Length: 361
Image (cartoon, rainbow, N blue to C red; front, top):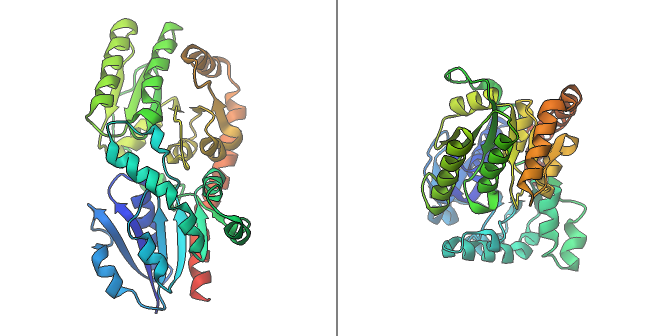
């Protein structure tokens, strides 16, 4: 039997790429495939062991399939391409280096080099991407021959298996919610995700006399940008009485409880390849306010509630207008319809079809 070797540079907890790699392993194994996981950096060893890449080159056999996740510069890419094995590349997109904190020179360089690697992905037998927006980012780097080969064959597939995965999670009991409307942000607490903008929008909502509370879930837990968030959060709490709570490293049970308690979700990102929190907002039947980032709009479809990117007062006014006078029943119908579409797209069949197709080749 051939083995499916699943690669990502990093397979770590609370990371979307690593979680997807692990979900693929579970999916393929349940379908009767032998699987092995490989990474340069990892902090997880269950339910599958994540092996060190140095051992991969002697472990891989000619009949095996390689499933390669690309989201940042990967030093193993050239050597993997050189192998004669059939291969799937899953492109998660790469954050543009100009959006990274200038002090983080290492990540800036890794993002720059990761974008330069895009033409190499044309050498894979099958290419998958998490959104049409991500596919377009990839095609921008392809030459005419690569475009002719892949443009109509790329597989658009959400970067997770099981959009309804929250059904098996039991929410943790939280203290009774106040009468405030809770707004929830989930994601990395970094500048290009616009978390500071969200805090400022919360202040503008309070200025409109709307009683709200803001929950921010993500990491890192420390650093200059996080300190700036805390300073602004303290200021709007003192000025407007808006509670802002930062949650770091919480469990799925705690996160589910926050989703169930919240009135609406929000994102203010400058760049996304997909946006899993947008899908989760649909899963919990929560409206989500977003800036016009193509990948997020693609995930939410007609259920996207747009707010302006550069005008915090106008964004707050749009949010307040929907929460007070919006067509909540009509919007709930849009959310349900879009979630059912995503649940089908994320049921794993697209991944298995790609693997099985190469296995039969």
